[in-house]
Picture 1 (tube, one colour):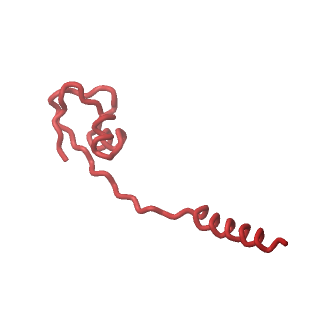
Picture 2: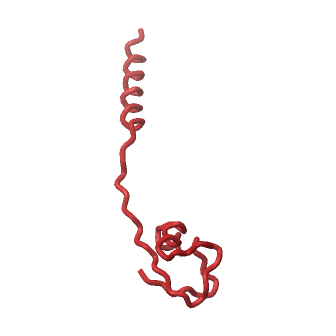
Picture 3: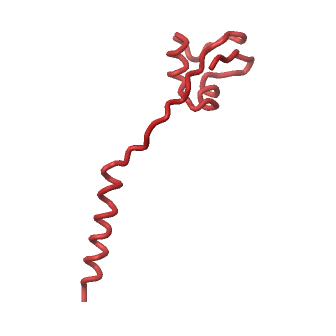
Length: 77
């Protein structure tokens, strides 16, 4: 998306508002100093990448472990 820099804009706020990163905006626009942007400049704000949620091995292991511990506790006299 094209965006015209306004007075008071910062790359960090633009990144936050557009669900992207300062690094992604800087890279898309060849910006070397992320603390210096000019009012009136038109920049490209890259789309946020949709990441698939990966289930971690921890999510898969913990419930089984807890279930085993609970089952073992019920076996006690």
